[in-house]
Length: 231
Image (cartoon, rainbow, N blue to C red; front, top):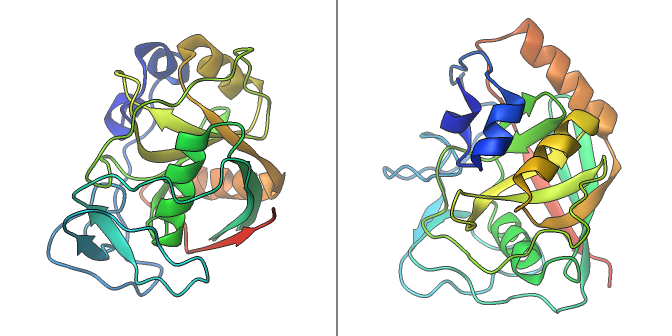
């Protein structure tokens, strides 16, 4: 499918990445709890609970009940200078990265909060030229504004980015820059906040890219997530 149908990104970024083959949802690769209501960042069959009313801060010890749809955005649940180690387990191998609230408090808070609720478990993975995107076609039930792009306008290879829509709001999709092609496309759009950087696992992304090329009708997914506080 065209990238503009996958992620609601700026027109310049869509143009720079171009088109990709249509993806068809495959059978679930993990056994996840579901509800009858679809969530926006995971596909039908991968949903968790729905949180009605004010969104609480999730538990920090990994015991939070999985939820994937919310009626209100979360409060700031992290410290303004906290950093976090993240691991996404995929069929291509683990992807490890660090996110840093000093880079973007709003963006990092949104990502960490959604990760602690388990939103990214079962989320589709879309490898595009120069980047890999994680998260479904919609949002988690809300949009968050206020995140700023990097001051120097640069997106180094290995950057972890929270995507914004054409109005500058974050909806929960995250992207990793894998080469200069992706960096240039993000620089052209010039609106997405960097929240961290990959520490290990770029090779896992390339394995996923190869699997996707060989199995065009398969959607690969984040199989598990882990979040730990580093400071």
